[in-house]
Length: 336
Image (tube, rainbow, N blue to C red; front, side, top):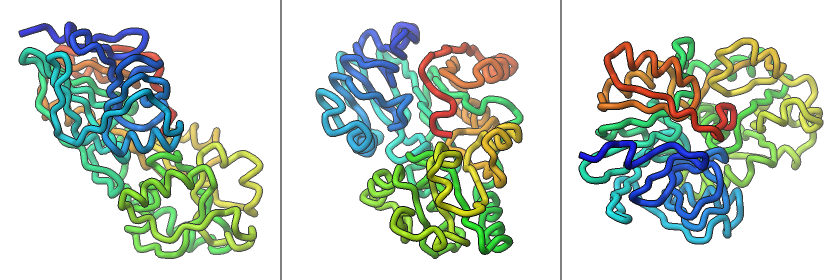
């Protein structure tokens, strides 16, 4: 069997497949790219050819314009595409709409690039599916034992309880525009909250894209279309950057919430002036990372980014071959 390092190897541009002559989630423009999902640190414009799920291609077109790549090739989940003798298939990653793991198989050896992923259910995207492999290439954004995400419903219950406690105050919820905002909306709806939810203009296009793909977000109203007093006792979804800029002054005495796995770290909440931290993440926590590796039991584990050392150390303690790849260009905070 060919050695895994002959199939995929880290380079300055990202993970490169020499026999296939393509990259997976390259960090700069290349000739051929396989893209796992639409977040900006994994999906960049300017590639000559892009292979991704139809949803990811739609997200990239929405964010970068229809001409974001020279050519695009949509791939269905679990479909196998052969290129230069290399089989490529995409499998659900459970991260955001259209997110996928990339399975790369060559001469009997399979490597799976997780991209960003989580294991828990999410109404906005297909749930993660484990794919048997010789090498599992995983993220480790929350690759420390301290990061154990609580139940999503319990976090949303905190938000709804705050609404009851402070019925005259608007509740401003910071959530990344792609994926997190829409997931928070579906979680709020699943908790039985049917009132209109208000939103910052920065999330409008992606909300609409999710709705076009069949994701029910309920009644949504742009903040710009209402008077400030209308927002008292209401939920407003906005990108994290809006929590501290002039836009937030449209609301009077808001309860400021932030939905992120990083809200487990109290200092981060204090730094952002967040009074209601909501620990809701689109990344696997420590238990999900380790359980996934144990379930797959690959011959090798490679860690692309995040808290690499801790996860590699854990894998070594379990008798596994593991190594950090330390790929520069993926941002742990980009979608959290």
